[in-house]
Length: 110
Image (cartoon, rainbow, N blue to C red; front, top):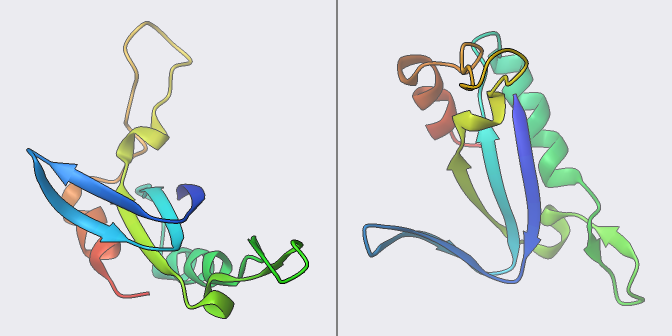
């Protein structure tokens, strides 16, 4: 699994002019699931993300987690995080999980 995590004061995703998801303060996460990822990997990463102390406390220090601030998550599937560009000019996505595998994992509650 690969994740790009960004703190946001608000974020939204729009598809064909329609807002598909939006959050206020929290994390925008681009998530790529690999064929070899298991439920154990997903649980570990989920727990790690919500516990990361990356939000500022009253003194301006990154000391608070998503749980501490009761923040939200906007999770976006991003199979391109598994692109391999080692050979040739066309990226290979051979390690990215196919939708029948990744979609149930992506949609599972945290």
